[in-house]
Amino acid sequence: MRATDGSFTTYDAPGAGPQAGEGTFGENINNAGTISGDYEDFRYEYHGFVRSADGTFTTFDAPGAVDTYVLFTGMTEEGAITGFLYDQYGTHGYLRSPQGAITRIDIYESIATLCEGITTNETIAGFDQDRDYVYHGFLRGRYGVVISLDDPLAGSGAYQGTVGYDVNPGETSTGIYTDPINVVHGFVRTRQGVFTTIDPSGSTGTFPQAINAAGAIPGFYYDANNSAHGFVWTP
Image 1 (cartoon, rainbow, N blue to C red):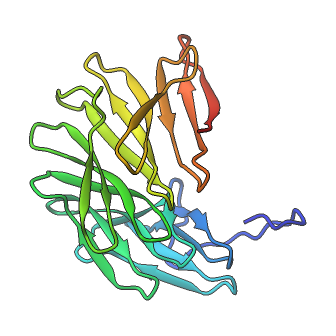
Image 2 (image 1 turned 90 degrees about the vertical axis):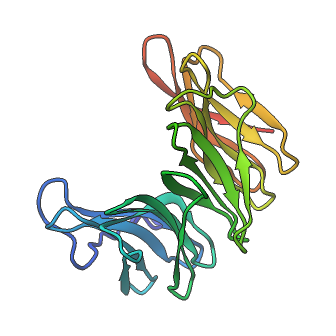
């Protein structure tokens, strides 16, 4: 963690493994200085953690999880956390409340569910994979109501479809879709359900990563030489 004066604070979650590839991965920080992330232990298993501003750690595992992951768009200012887990049956999303209660999330008839981003009102952006291996984005509201996000330009073949990555307080969301010829494009979707494709000039594959309250979207894209470049899309 880097402070405004340029000083660094390093930390290791209790139980994090010391070997190559193991350790602690900080992902989010809020205005109170609370950090969330995950760590890999000596058994190569992942667990979530919350580190308060005073350095106190709380570690957590979603119920039944072998691995629990926290993503970099996965915490609200209030401390709600979302991510995904692996268990013996597959991949599932979860929501951890600021008080520590964990709810597993599975989209109906999916074979895998991944929660990616969360906003202040606990609306979650993510995606699931159906039995034909097609991806479908979703928004899940605080009380469990789910809205499907399927970009109209997305392909319907295996490993094509729509992937939701993040959502802002106005419920404008972003992510990617893979078209029928397997080219990846970015998208932004308004609360009213209008999709707009995001493709910087010269892109052969576009990957938005997050969205802020003003609707600005950072990400990266690949050019014809397979070189990566950053971008910011603004409404």
